[in-house]
Image 1 (spheres, helix red, strand yellow):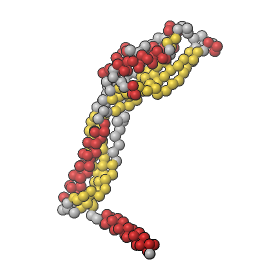
Image 2 (cartoon, rainbow, N blue to C red):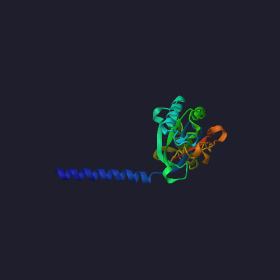
Image 3 (cartoon, rainbow, N blue to C red):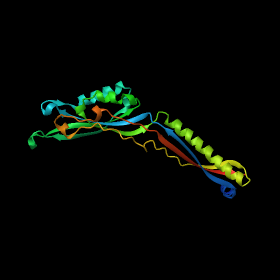
Length: 242
């Protein structure tokens, strides 16, 4: 008896599922795509900075340690409002310093690469000014972000859905119909915050830095031109025709 009741329940569930599927497939509907866009200027920049040890005036007995350079950079970053958790070591490596071109005189010097999340863009140059320029190997931009990113993405998605419904209403009006409930929504949005990167002037060590000299553009300032990024959102919608 229990087996018979169970079989009946299974048959009923399958029948209901097929009925719903057939209703969806046979219903009159219209498919449209909604679009929304917005220009946003990022207010957060991820900076990559590489530091490396060096010998003062080429004197192998007078070395500026990586710990000293790291403390200078860390203190300078904290001074412009960088949070401790936003100051990260990205890579650690070493290189040979050869003052006499003789194999036995080669010494291994350390270098580190840091990734710093900076929201106070006006303080970037001040941060670099607090670090020994001879210990800075190079700087570059890793990426962009925005403090209100989630809210901006939400607004774009809402606008795209509304645009999809408006497009469906235009089509329905042309055929003498009306739009009913939404049957399906497909989110095709992909927000590319890093699609457009600026071209900063690099603050880098020249070949002469091997013996302690340093060359930098514009006095060692990182000139960042943060341009607006155009974010786009595409939403596909299927609406019932009444």
